[in-house]
Length: 591
Ligand code: PEP
Ligand code: MG
Image 1 (cartoon, helix red, strand yellow):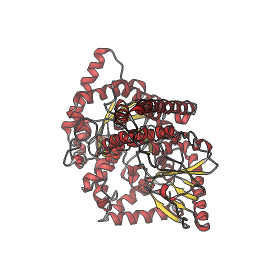
Image 2 (image 1 turned 90 degrees about the vertical axis):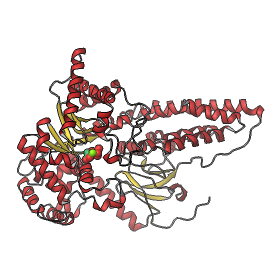
Image 3 (image 1 turned 180 degrees about the horizontal axis):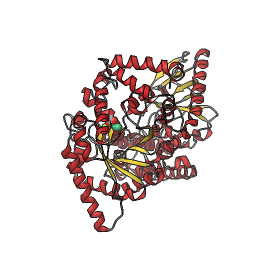
Image 4 (image 1 turned 30 degrees about the vertical axis):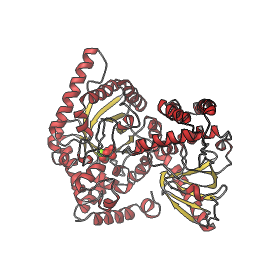
């Protein structure tokens, strides 16, 4: 298909998955867009089978070579498992046997492989879980690699990139992404992909601005085309005009300046102007994010979402695997604590083989601790692994989606049972391990004084609390306008929890996304929260605002905000107050 001249300032919008602005020229990665199909004769079958086996071997050699290269790079070493996944796909017996069967039915290798991959992709696409579904991109990446070998394409453009390349690809595989040299690649854009794809995860690790899910960008762009990628907003501008170029250059410099400035906050105290200390911790999905959390000045991990260990695989992780992951975090974040949350599946995340997808109302179904309490054996394996890891650092254990006292009592009974088993086996753990719960159901808010004596700490999960309090599905774009963190009901719910915690002497923190939003900081501090856990890149920004706030003023502000009858009025007043109090932070700069 011929490509027409691209108009100046052509905007494309996708999903921004790695913040920052990249300005450069497009380097379109040539990927095979179609597969040739022809019929082979019976006499050619053996040759085709041999060609297939040889292509698999060459593809494996290539992956081993990449692995070798990245193993010398500290920041990429954690991601070698992706290459291992690709190597496993190359050995997948289903893929191999289906391709070989088709070759025996007189299809050429290219077409046989393509058909076998399509069948497997259909299986993947039926999976409801976003994270798992996106793993079909690993399958595509491996398929592309084998097809390139079959086509005799050995030229690896990624190794010959010019300075300031903006890589454009239909789907950049994680193996490709690992090879991107930060000194040359100023950003990348892909047609496919989502927030939880490996490629997105890697882009963030590498600090390369990236926009994915653009659907048909590679059909539009051409090599050497000047372009801008804004990984914060998900906007891509092709053939920018001089004015746009200048505007984005300014934004890029402001972003970089702010990033550099924010580094200074890493070692500064997290305290208000009236000397109130606040603990800022990180939320963690991947073990490999611990160094990033540390670098941003996190004082421990306030929420480790263990479900990411369970997704993207056929069988749940063994006790050993879990123990290795948990103890690694505990050791690397020590002497600061890590709060390990037990499995939170169901809702919008499903495990293979547990038939949860068919629930009519999964958000209110067999989710989180409810699931664990049904799958007791699975739960006990996780509790054992967490307890064993507690011997290697300051580990705390947290149960998600508690809605009643009976649930937490059952969890504690099981925990005690596992402790006794460990005692009997002489296996070490921290006997004083702290136990807490997520406060994320309206029921937990209302009975917080009754839950308090059962636990050592509360952690408020506003992401779910808002969804359940306001009856607004957190993932449904049609009701997104109703998802208001500053709704008077949410402010009252937060106040109830903070007051109950204060009265009962229970530690309370917040780990929902609200915690990382600088605009809400005064509200949270004013309500009495002194421990916030957030995505680690938010920590320097939040600390910067915190150091300019007075706790006494924040308390007065909350009293004022409590009087408004609508979320909109609360938001308007808060915005005005913040701009008035901190014009440098909220007036001109967007933080
Ligand atoms: C929450 O609900 O606020 C929370 C932190 O947990 P998750 O986003 O994993 O549901
Ligand atoms: Mg939650």
